[in-house]
Amino acid sequence: MAESVEKGVAKLVERTWTPADLTGLPRRDRQGCRYSAYIPDRLVGRELFLSGTTAADVSDAEAALAGFDNQVSSLVDTEALARLLLRAEAVASSHIEGLVVGGRRLLRAEAAGALGETAVDVTTAEVLGNIDAMNFAIQQLAGAVTIEGILEIHRLLLASTPQKHLAGRLRDAQNWIGGSSYNPCSAAFVPPPEGDVEDLMADLCAFINDDTLSPVAQAAVVHAQFETIHPFVDGNGRTGRALVHVVLRRRGLTTKAVPPISLILATRAEDYVAGLTSFRYLGSPDQPAAVDGVNHWISTFAAATTRAAVDAGDFEERIDALKATWRDRLGGVRAGSATAELVERLPGTPIVTVQGVAEMLGRSVTSIGEAIDRFAQAGILTQITTGRRNRAWEASEVVDAFTDFERALASPTGGTSSAKPARPVPARRQRKKP
Figure 1: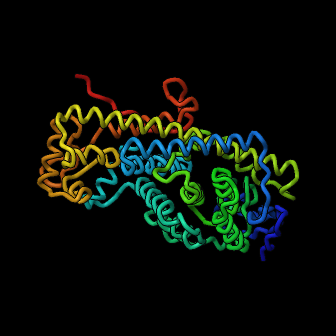
Figure 2: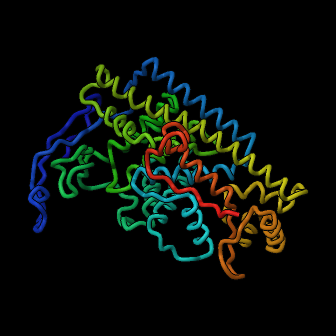
Figure 3: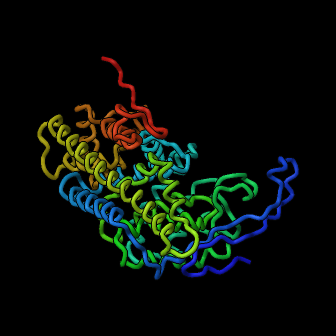
């Protein structure tokens, strides 16, 4: 029986692991042991002490997010940019989990799905599930957050994976991070016992619904607490990173688009893990070591958020400039025409079909077919399927820009030409020599 969560004292509880019949495995994986599970403080009612430097980091992040949100309103079509950045964040969140998928591969899988083709790429299907979960999170949980809402994020996340039987259910057994796959005896971290999970999740939801703390600090604490609870058998990291955007959206800092914070956290993986570890103190939250640990994590998160907002703004400007070149190459673009609408919407859907665009814009197949022909003649769209039926076209300049964006955010300095990427990145497309 798990111990109840005691308010104001983060602690370790000793538990006994009794092995199952695992004949055929090495002795280290078949052993029983005593292990320590960590139970964090409740969040509701806990006073958080931000140092001067941490408060400044949080202020910088919130100013960067506000500036980005205002910029989105004045430049690129909001929906197009939002779709691209949502994909970037979903891809990055999956990178941290070890699911490496480049932008072109992901976009083509989306297009194949729109054409009714059966997905055979399991990894891509998982990342597409991440997009669905992230989209649900920011669109549907902007009001009161409940355990049921978080379970739905998780259900969408795992719906197309081999773990779908675990989707949308809190764990009912002990889990752990690191060490053996068969016991927690050598784990790097053991989350709270299964009996404490629901109570801690209820406290987390109540904290999310309280607007007392500044938004970026609240998002940082929510993410760290969720990862500490680790309420699911699988998919905890991606669900926890989606909750970051739930907080930022419901607090009004990111009303138009999702900044790719996970891309920065994936690049700074060691700092990310160290920050989460520092958040997990023992004892009272007002002791110096606890205060320092929480401040360390919030500052790490705030710095990543600042860079994500600034770089997303730069990416937006690149897409806006690209659209301007399209208008020049297309010649006269009549306001309100299918061509004009497609210029605005293409960045968010850089792989298209005639039927798909017709449905998206609410126009006839004939007018869209003519517009796509114009884009193809101008070199903006290239057909990527064969034959006359179910044809698909790609705006390669958008996909290349998206790839460059991913690559830049994988570099500690903001560019892979000046510093090697800190994690796997998609390769640039090799252009044919004239």
